Length: 221
Image (cartoon, rainbow, N blue to C red; front, side):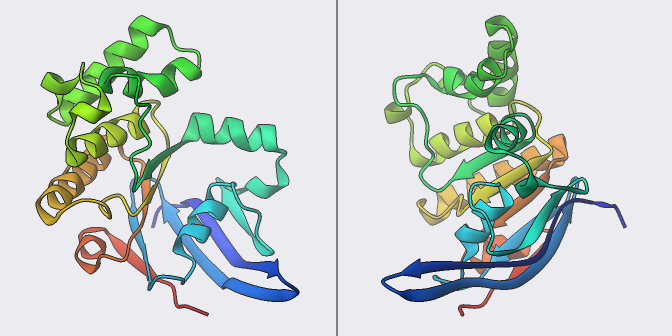
């Protein structure tokens, strides 16, 4: 079995509110290897999105640790975690989060340009990714000129643009109708097969979870 790219070891997360302690996660452990696809499932309120935020270094756990290639990400300072996310992690959100004033092509090129790539190289890479996802004819459209499914495929291209080792996707089909959700799922699985990142998908959709390589269910505390 391949060594883990990312490991979650005994993660717990609590919040203090109005003098009460709210437990969201307790003792969660899992791992994902490079090229592996993992679904994190569970009912609403089971902490799926919180766990994803902890895995991304955006939320600090109350207990436990997250290891990337054996290194504890929460031992890094915020600048180090930001640089790690910029260089090694791609994100896909339920709400797409495209920049409305940029074309599809410019949205996909953006993470490369932020990382210092020359504009010509960034746009060339973006064009190739959009072509892979069947969006060449939509490359110069703004997000509000695209359907929901097309916007999410642009978001998938953007997530893979900088060649990340890890993709974190939070309900990537949650805001789409059944037909568009199916097309987006196929696009995501095909993209991951080509680019061989570790893919972690938070979902409440059993059909989506079954299409991934492995499922880790969470329970509501």
